[in-house]
Image (cartoon, rainbow, N blue to C red; front, side, top):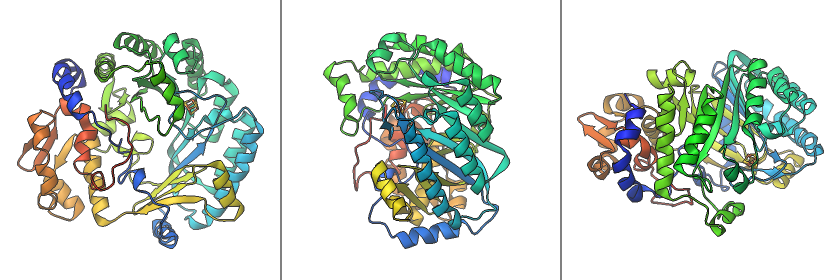
Length: 466
Ligand code: SF4
């Protein structure tokens, strides 16, 4: 069992050494294969066959994702797919497009399938005024049947939030919310063009609690301009005053070749170094575990009685495009610009540009930009990487049973490639098992990369792993 509090204290010095060695670009493994493998040159008929197969079983659960891309202003660190506008009519126009996408998709789905998970991401889902949120609710409930215990979540930007927004998403069925906080230090907030006094966040949390949301999560980011381990320690303390059920402490992804607004941080020479970033992560682990939160893996923390912490304990944790999750086995159907859908054997992603997304819908076609059909080897590696990210290691006998192959023989080369990671103390290899050490928990992406068949074939522009 991982003990993150001890991890942070005991592992600091060796981690500082290792971070230089292993801080290379790599995926976050919210999927395998990862999105850079998706191709526009995809057999669409085969994708539709896959959707057909996916809908054969009326009991198989659905996970829905709606991408609501609008924001009023651009945060300079932003890595999301956004449309910056202050035009409220944009929301109504977009709902019209979602309505058409739902109408095109619904005939492909088995209407008996229960929705067990729903997520609104963006952009800023609360960009939509309450009346538009109610319109969205009517649309969704027209097409889908929700399981009584469905986990329905919405990403909240506290800066322009009203109680009416919170209540509208609650009427829709949302029972979980995650709030973007990033950092509470005013200088950092100015540097990233995201001004959000703590009182504003506290007000949002109070409205969510009053409205009956059963889980509130705060999102923080380390590695932002002007942050130090000391300023970030105060951000953690501030976040703890709000008593969230979960926290996500993400590493800032610096990808100026994809997000040009991020270049300003380099021009002003404001970004903390790798060692300082690592110190911030370890400060977060120390403080949050001292406050009673369980470190779920990579970047997530939860109260011990939270579903996520329970899933972590009983080995049912799962990783999807939103990060760690408890709802394994649901097929993901994404709607809206840039959204990704996933069945057992396929991925498909909608157009990332609003114009192209709209043009496809105008032509009465599904707005698919690119996709991927998984091979048998992809599916096996997906399971292996998921076990590394979620279960703390690899159990050869269990994997052989689940994968239907002799795991150790089939992946002997990958297992051999772990020797340097073992020598550096990131994992322990024993007969029939690989166990990730406390130190190795900080390098999960590096360990998982050894089982990624595509990294050497087609390197992609990922952010750094620490
Ligand atoms: S609110 Fe979120 S999605 Fe919108 S610009 Fe800021 S970071 Fe990006």
